Image (tube, rainbow, N blue to C red; front, side):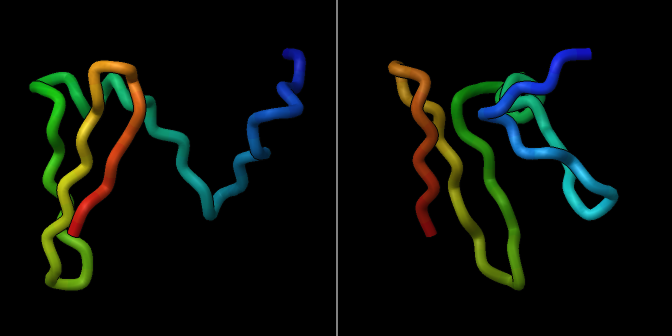
Length: 52
């Protein structure tokens, strides 16, 4: 397997999640973090926007 220099190495403390699995039901994901709700949106251009 060839190592990609632009992708960080994963350790047991890191997880790599494909964005397609997050956005399989639409372009918005709601995240609850420490009792606060965040919205992660995927734009038409494929960029990600995180708002509190």
